[in-house]
Image (cartoon, rainbow, N blue to C red):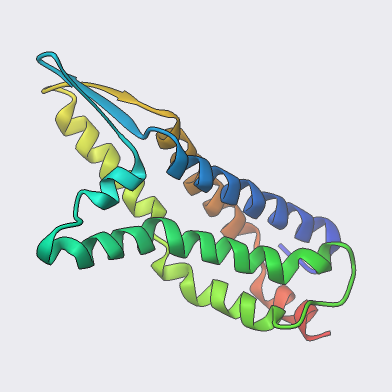
Length: 166
């Protein structure tokens, strides 16, 4: 799809903004709840990151935080920054090419979809041992993954680079 048209750019920006807001929701709300033999445990994405906050696991906590939250947010923010003026048919912002280049370089490192697949597999395994209830953050994360895939399929990188050159 050619994304040099303002309407196509607006769709991409809309999806990026939606994913950004949903990612904030995914970090803010409970992710899942486990009930087993009278024990109740609710956890969030932040709790999952903080589970690795001791000793040699600290680098793992930092990596998890970056790959599933920070990098996807930076990527979405850079895309919104780079394409925002193009939607209104205005000249690109200073640094728009660098921002779009950053968004493109971060694409392979944005692993929210890997996280949601891993969680889903784990939930299938745990479901026999405990009552599992997925929270709003799970659905927000799933939405981020679907929206990100849609957004990435709509982007014509060549057209965006052409629009940013003008």
